[in-house]
Image 1 (cartoon, rainbow, N blue to C red):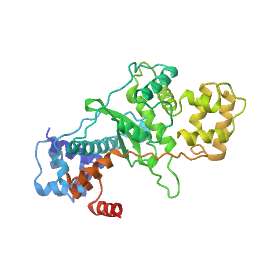
Image 2 (image 1 turned 180 degrees about the vertical axis):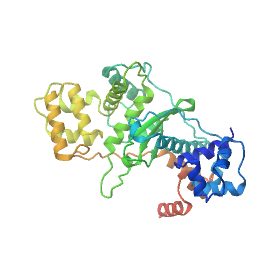
Image 3 (image 1 turned 135 degrees about the horizontal axis):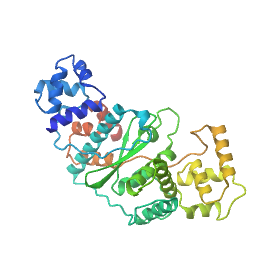
Image 4 (image 1 turned 90 degrees about the horizontal axis):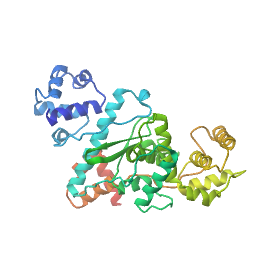
Amino acid sequence: MSNLALRLKSARVMNGLTLELLASKMDNMVSKQALQQYESGARNPGLDVLRELAKALNVRPDYFLREHFLPLGDFKFRKQSKLGQKWQDAFTEKVRDALEKYFELEEILNAQQSFKNPLKRPGVSSEEEAEAAAQAFRDAFSLGSDPIYNVLEMLESIGVKVIVLDELSEFDGVSTVIEDNIPVIVVNKKLVESAIEGEKPKHDRLRFTALHELAHLVLKIEDCEAKQEERLCHSFAGAFLLPESRINEHFGSMHRNRIYLQELINVKQTYGISIRAILMRLRRFDRISDYDLRTFFATLNRTYGAKNEPGDCPSIEKPFRFEQLLYRALAEELISISKASELRGMPLSEFRDELSKIAK
């Protein structure tokens, strides 16, 4: 099948359109049957039809001329039944489009990255092994046990592709692997930038989600149920954000009869990990009892709601690499402003406005 045929179907699915809806959106300039033939590669559309297809599908005409159609691995959605197959298919094509732009920019600048899993024994079957894997991963990249200021930036620096998409509330994060074993983590924009004016984004949740997805990518978890796999990935993420040595430093090495909420808030603000995740780690290392854990959770839920809690997460969680490459290529006149706006996924007028603000 030709790249044109693959791209036409990809753009249609990305927009959540059936063949009938696409034909209708084009005022039946072409029939459903003709569109089907274009997507199967049996026929090629003329230039006039191609321009109208680009308009209907919200892409530039040169989208159909990209040479390489990127193969993607499978995504494992934890709320698969709620999301629906149509949404999942559209999501996959949006990720493909974003990654193709990313790789095109890297190729222009000769700035390709590689990733090598540093874990010599990635197989895990227990929380203890997941904890050890998190510390081994930190050690491999000389992260020690210090707080990580920007998890997304850290992931990008070691070769993980981080994609931010503006999607529905049910989606937090998901991961996959593409050609040459390049890991990809996709997170919801609502965790990076709050959609509600005046409300701060939940960066503690974003950081935990990203590291949870990293665990899916670097750990070899076999012969266990889905719930157990999620628990192991939770353990990896929690240990990555708040290593055991730091628990001992801040809460002591013995069981505590009492812990004040302010202690938890202080650690949250230092390590960028939610209070609820801290409590789970305290229970894991027997610093608190099951009763204390239940009581704390009940109090938090009653006072702040099931998804909120006190204390700010001070980190700036945002992936910077793609944007940095984009402005570098533009500054070095390797791409035009028009091309930069296309790679950024913004109308040219909006991108020009953004550039003028930066210049000021």
